[in-house]
Image (cartoon, rainbow, N blue to C red; front, side, top):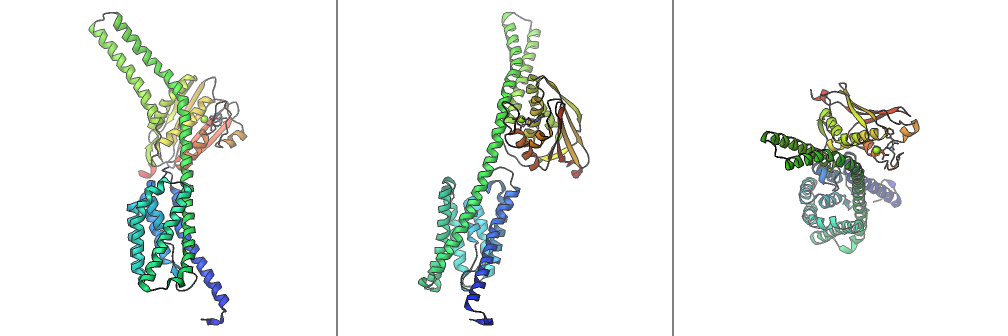
Length: 439
Ligand code: ADP
Ligand code: MG
């Protein structure tokens, strides 16, 4: 077939080029859902699929369809090949039986539309992958990275071996003629599936480390609070103790006793509330973005910060409060960011002072302002804010602002800083106002 006057060498070149182009396209189809996932996943789950199961299934289905729509010739024109097995296997391993079942349906319908001789073998093969691979999932989740690589590689090879023997059995393809090509195919698909699994594992590890850091930073703040809270708890406990001793020593009138009981009850509720507030704050949960009204959240944060501020002779003042301002955030993370900024404000005033908090809004934006009259920062220090481990405090971690910047930008907000050395600092959190959107 030396048509169009091309030499054999040239023909092989175009084969090679076409094959490479086709293969690279296929690789792209597989990688793109993973990258898209990375761009949008902020829920902070360790499992690739758990947080966005539906999205991931749809994205992987698209991968499979694209791979099938744009197959490529592998080495000779007899072999048309695509990499749909990669998203199928990876999807089954990370997503489990339900995801696997859906991917099977998608790939089978696609394969039926393509038609041709190989259809039954291909569908049978896809069925074996979809039904069998989920059983390996518990093992896959347990083993280390090297084990995972070995396992996906072996599954990929087993699946291609199945195709090869089925082809030999049903169509009588002489094995010794095609074995070379199949070995190449196995290496090819094996390498790509290993790279895919490595990419997912790498992303999960990063997500995991990021969450571990968030948690660490929060625990550090909580442990700082612990002293302030136990100090604050001492007041109600002291007064409860006092009343009980009084009642023990004298025989009071019924009326007086009831009055004491009432006071004791109130003190217990105060103590309970204090503990509850902290427990809610300390709980490491990662939620979804939800629309919230800013006012109660800010009040809540001021309440949990009160013992800490009291301990440092800082008065927190609400200057202006827009009761209607609403923003779209992850409630817990929003609180964490606000706590970090308020805490820094309090710590910037070692001699005590006033911390002014305001919530303002325009139709488009909401601003939460926290202003202290503390030590302030130079321009260079402001620039370094948010850098990990940048801290001017003896016991500082330099993680608070880094976490704050990252949380706020995840929620489409911005952190603005206005500071003057020796005068004070104003932090502003700026968010899109959703109250105006929903009206
Ligand atoms: P840490 O509080 O553990 O030091 P942060 O990341 O919260 O870490 O803050 C980093 C540094 O930024 C602080 O050490 C401090 O020097 C500076 N800083 C942050 N907020 C203020 C503020 N309100 N006033 C003055 N300096 C601040
Ligand atoms: Mg801090």
